[in-house]
Image (tube, rainbow, N blue to C red; front, side):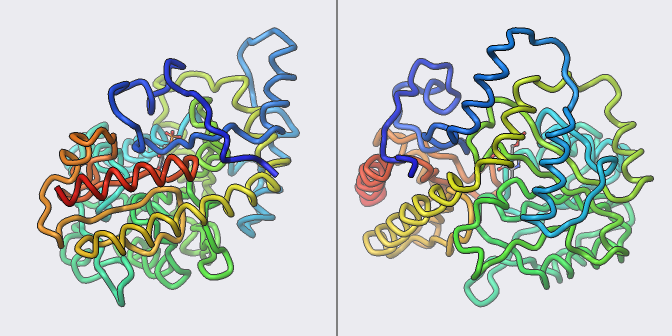
Length: 378
Ligand SMILES: Cc1ncc(COP(=O)(O)O)c(C=O)c1O
């Protein structure tokens, strides 16, 4: 069993998370303080030992692994030509905007959401239509009425985070189907970012329903974006892929690339293959550890800070902490003053909230929670 309790020094390793603000204790950007699965490290080592790092293409056993992963984990039968390899998922969101929008068109998304969702429209000189998620029976869902009021003939794409960063929601089959029907009715392309789909904490209770699981007539206007980077902690290697079932949509997406994207890292292909092919036992251990951390975080904060709101975290290692009910306008400032580096809710579209990354050692999380509680009370 992987030992997630081992603390690894990450300071002064060129880590975005740890070295951007060396004066603070970081629980912000979405990477975890764990080493990757041994199978990934071995695959990288083997590729490194070869010693030649020229331009790379996806090798056959990677493609086989991706196709088998999509079948096994998502229940989708995908062919090789439907897969587009990318050096990251955010560039794919930007490509999606450029491929289907023109200046003056609009991109819709629901907030709070991963900050680049609120920025990629600019790459295509589009406008942004950000509609707030709303609470339905204590669970964050879509505000269908507000979305219908906001959508116009110039809206071209909808950008979805499922499971949702930062809300931790795993949207149901009914919600995703209703969203796809909304896209069909208004002629939108659905960009479905499912990077967190292997970080669902209880898959029996909240199973993943992918855009690839939609019926064919709805699926044809979808672009599903996936990556091993969050689950296996290899975001720094840069690899993601899109699955685009419809040939015309695929052509448009590919043609938007122009010469803007670099070649994909030759090591990243091998890490992705090992993660998806051999990483499952490690992933199971990870989910058990994250579940324990999630329970510690939600139970502690709900007990100690009853004024703040924390949604049920169904997926990811990210906790959305809404301090507005307690009348705290800038929890980020309070946390920072106490020495913690969290993610500021403002960038996700909601002031008065912070996001805390609990993909770290339980002892470190406990310490950070104690500091956060004192900071909020002060
Ligand atoms: C929803 C979501 N999409 C995309 C990304 C980043 O993807 P990439 O590093 O491949 O650009 C993240 C990282 O946190 C994320 O949470």
